[in-house]
Image (cartoon, rainbow, N blue to C red; front, side, top):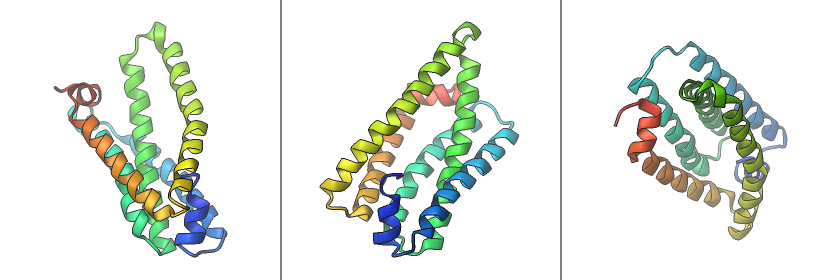
Length: 171
């Protein structure tokens, strides 16, 4: 989304460059709100896992309506909600990994996770840029198909027993 956001604002929303900043701010604010809500969340087990999986689907699913939205305020709300799900999910995922990793291995595990996150972002940006070029700059189409792909992968992952067990402890 980071790669296509400037094009989305200009070509789809037909809004000024200020809206690029507003949408980025919605990402940040949504993330903070999601993280704050997650920090107050006290459920464990299946309820917690189900909420994490719903957040995965919500983030991926937000790309679909975003591909059809032509109103800046609606796009702002969708992006804010999507990134609230990201913030919520990240806090719960981090605590889950901490809980399930032996203390002697935590440093190594989190170093690896950080390296993967930091290393994959530039790679993902490059790949997404190439995909946008293949779609002749039609950002709405890219968001639509990215949403479909994300929902498909998210759904397959959620029905996979190992993935479901990781989040919920339930098989």
